[in-house]
Length: 280
Ligand SMILES: [Zn+2]
Image (cartoon, rainbow, N blue to C red; front, side, top):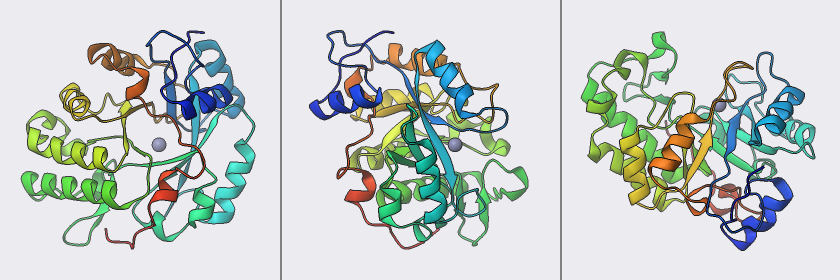
């Protein structure tokens, strides 16, 4: 297995314990960790561990937590954490929808190694709750106005929700996905990037959706963002290809210092920022 330099004293310790960096070594090469793996479909923990062993890529296994998802309260979250501890993976919470901030206690959330969310579920200005990956729940009355809302919600999430990673970043619903490059203007990108950097939230490089775009990653790198590789697999067949992460790491010269590493107890996002009131 390739070794990479660890990017802080704390991370060296964590990396050695949990395997996110690889240990104290000399060469500035990123060792990929997939922080966004789900045990779904045919993929069980043993299968995930087997893939991890063969590929040398460490995993963070995430449970979907929130309204309409398998885990909806502290008891479920703690049972999940318990079931994953000591199994050689990071234990992650995927916070779903915006309602999650009202459903879990900071103490339970802090038992996870890290928390992530996306900006794919929110209420629009007319109060319609949208899940952007569900076509019949998406309302795009006006593309520009929709984009302004998406950026506003995303910035609000990054500013207010105690998360460590922003995942599925810049995802657009199918109805406008083909216009990604035109709709994600530099100005819109920079608002999201700026909020992520200011709030210490890492930006996922999603290898399955190939998101965010190269242009976004380049601008984020310039702005001093931190990145985290992730797949968001839907089952067993779409895990194991990290080529987009690898391409972006090479293209933008990302080093271990540019990459996310779960923070130690006491410094997690949930321990630095209170849970906000539900807004969207
Ligand atoms: Zn996910």
